[in-house]
Length: 199
Length: 224
Image (cartoon, rainbow over the protein chains, first blue to last red):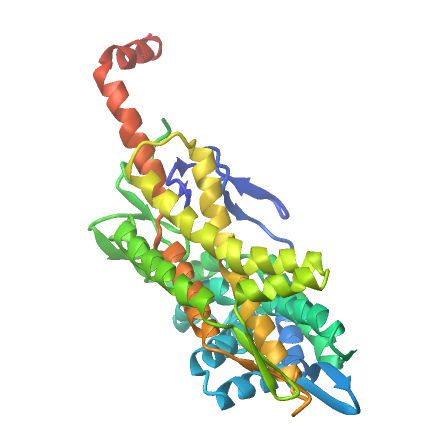
């Protein structure tokens, strides 16, 4: 038996084959789904995402030039400028939502998946996977990317604008960060953790 | 009405979604060891508190400027609505609409939506359960998107930095705006959507209680 997390209906647990979803019959919320080749795919995507973090934060995203002057900024520059102008709360929020939380989330996904792949399940994994669920809401790379696009719109009328490598890495990082939640099979990981910890 | 886990003495773990047999009001999940209750304790009280906090923050977020634009040393402070007005004057209607929706309509409708949900969890309303569930999904989904304007201002302040010619500086309004967004996310997190269904069942249950004959009639064919 499982219970729907939205309306608390009790339902018999369906057995799914790979690629199927189970929906609640009462309210239509998604109960769980079984994903194809979840562990290997998650490891691959998480490694790619973690590597991309370095160019995405360090390389300049966009730059402008006007009257012979030129300036560009990376994600890290954004945060240091906020700290320099004493806006500590926003600096902290931007750092957490765009760098800290997404990277910790990817590290967690990688660590759990590789531990299951190589049969090294430890009780500490429970803490890791619980935190993974918490971090999901606070990942805002996609919103930051949209923010970059809107500011590009604003800047295009103001000065000559150049797009730098940081933007490309940011797009790829966004793809990886989203793909992790697509490939990660949470129900299967919980089941495997439970099985191996009982033994 | 379908049977509910609460009535069967079961509870769903909010973290790992394992169905637990509840021994106490509050207990640790047998799989992931999260301590949880069958319903989030004091869910409505917490949601109300965070929503009111967000509503209070909404006022300074709109009154104070989000950023100060320096052109040749001349400062020009603009609030959220000022910025949108400038875009309309410049003839960039699509951007104006995006920013108006993301930083004005979305936060306000999120706060309104949370109030509606809280009211629905307490009283009987005309909204159907499907609509209430959808409203909850929308409020939950919108959460991070209100941060859009904060990120725009951040990027602008970092990129537009050409010394005396033009530069952008972050102003105090954005701090309030960020706090408002964080508060609404907390409010949506502390709301327990199962209360909507509980409340609906409570109201429906009263109707069946006053007509006990219906229950007997339903059982008859099964008895035979």
